[in-house]
Length: 485
Image (tube, rainbow, N blue to C red; front, side):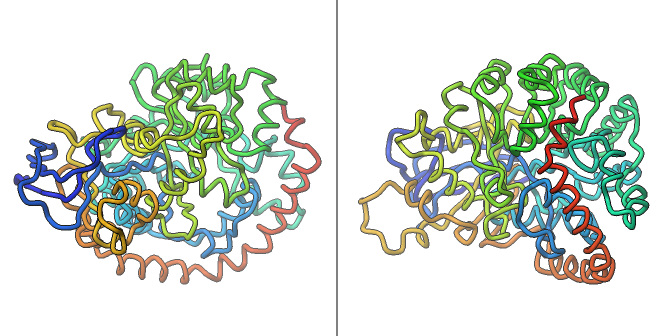
């Protein structure tokens, strides 16, 4: 890769800088930053910072609402996902990765969601190819689950509660026979052999602790420790999950995962909305982290993560878009700004500072996705992942020298202000457009594919609505609190 020399009006080199932002020049050599120095003459109106890292996402290019999965309580919304029409996995992932890149994201944690292991390897290859073509770094999370497919209770019990008209269909379509823990671990290694590269990592992905048997969780912990492989899972996302955990493992839920080596310094738990301070302290001791998904938690009525308790305990945390931006636009910059507003009020016990905010989106997120601790600063030797914003457009009406440029970013920045994005020294977004793929054409084809599957989706709608009603009654009656294992 050829060397590049870039100059900027403002350079945000590292979180927590005390000095005002100033102009700077960056020289790239291959996939690394070679030199950073004051700019002799900067390109007008540009601001550079490390690219963002999305620490939790499902890379769903086609939006949920497109096939009727409206925003509602998570446990009911999840059942509606079965209506998604068939979509080519390459195109769906490329569409999601391209949108994220357009909003300044250079690294994406893709939590692959299908439980069909028969297509796992082929889908992993397609998704890795999409990441390569778009140009982002990829953390591919292999889905692992072997219990509680339908909800937080025994599958046969929940199946029996469904409408008799639907039971055969539900059993044949959703109650998939799962591999043994040993076979699952071999599948993870097979995926790793197929797609791992310097810009692609493969991670162990228990769907959630309640979806895994003790044997599977123990196998995950053993494999993580033995192979130094990271673990990503959904963790205490909802109040219903909290009640299930308390009924199943009173006072011991997080301790149990730590004892199994599932939670360690290699762990990222998505959401963590219902973690208690003592559990946060335990995770902090293990140097585990939580990926905060603010917009997703609002839209699915899950609550707001206790970020102040993370800060007080010294637990690292990152941020994710979770395929659930407020406007269905996968805009990570908007997600960054909303998190800044929600978590930084001074009347909280431990407000989110700018330094912690950017550490989450840079250093911690990069570690979660890529398993590397060498990121978060525009310094010589650092990865050449650089987000360039059109500061002239951001500051069009400002009186000069009245406000720190970073405050302007935290007030106004969105994907429309992304001028360029470099990942591993390659410019993957230029003038707001993805350079490696034809994103508008991909979007048109994804929409066309989903509309070809519209008849099936409409036929499934009444089945899914009856299933959601069954689940709603199950949880309202406290069925999940009787499901202690």
